[in-house]
Length: 561
Ligand SMILES: O=C(O)[C@@H](CO)OP(=O)(O)O
Ligand SMILES: [Mn+2]
Ligand SMILES: [Mn+2]
Image (cartoon, rainbow, N blue to C red):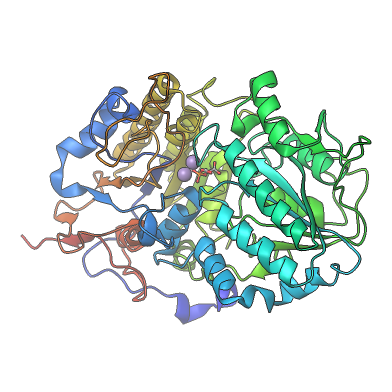
């Protein structure tokens, strides 16, 4: 099984009607959902002629697909979509119970405490401190507060006597300003543990976009700031309580939850209350991989040159999950990740489909690592080329809302016109990354930039007689305001709208076309609930293959007329 399997078991059946050898562009607009047109729908407000024409021009070749909740393996249909589960579904063609759900199950059954990972960290409980590091919110994208609460209860019942929590404030998957409440809740919980004889406190923290949770090596300084605060107990801001830290830093530095500077909690003598030292145990409690991999490397790798760690404590470290299936990182983990295997990318390279994938750094792993089932690297470097355009770093994306959309499109165009690849796959980040800033004006600019990029790619497909498939991984830019149950915008106490920085529950568009697509090809009518997991089989068809029988069904048919 896995990548080692060769020969017949990877051979896909020929599609009875669709030809092979066409160039297929697979375009994923990040954070681009479909919602009713109004002033908070930045996609609607923006000038997006290309995406509009896909919708208007070909009713049998444009549809919506589900991109949230159970359609992508999340616990409930109240869970918004996200890039990890969205790209996993797009690439794997099947719906896997995702990390968040597996952690829910392991905590509910108590099995989490029977596993190898927990036994490993437990070895430190007698003499060391247990450190928990992760995103503090109930967003459910990277972590969930109720899981942290259950874990705290569980570890203390299983013998942890000294616990330190290092919190990354959110404001991205949840509203800005909510971090204070999450920190208060956590402090109350920790105080209750005190009553049970467990010495438990928050020890350090910072905003998720500025401290610790960088991804795809965009900016190691982010992780360095986290290392200094969590491990070394060193940060520019010191407070005696985390509630005070969040309150004061928001007021005094004007930073929002996502970008709070790093802080350390100190005792009355100014000494940090929770440095990480030899003999301690560390758990990173995020279930989602991308924004924990860099910290995991810093915590686990003996040889490490990304920044000066100053000290490299001998600890027992476990991830909530194993974050990278290829690197086997971290080597210890509390819950086994979903076993996403035999993804469409792996099948296609075994069947002679040459693949090019590209995005800019902040989304690069989405069309490679997530697409391939949380596996880094190539399946076959001779058949694949992955190109990363360096993202801007050290700025908020509303400052440069066009991001690298044009550069990504140019790379895709060149790959298409070069005719070396059968599949050219990109992620266009704008709608999502700028949508997360909550800046409506900038998000409108972002949506136009993404639309321009789609146009460039579609023009190239036109030139080579190819096929395109355009879709998105989840919603974001199509709704920038929080709403009540009736769908009306919510106002704050000053009468201003409450900005929605997070993803949404909206479906996403799926469009196919191009001169290489037989005129008889259209969307089937019998898969009305189709979701992102149906896209892989669809793409395999566009390459002239039948999908494996265990894949979610294709969304297209060839009409006989
Ligand atoms: O930025 C991120 O980490 C998430 C939101 O938490 O967004 P996406 O799933 O689109 O990557
Ligand atoms: Mn996304
Ligand atoms: Mn996002």
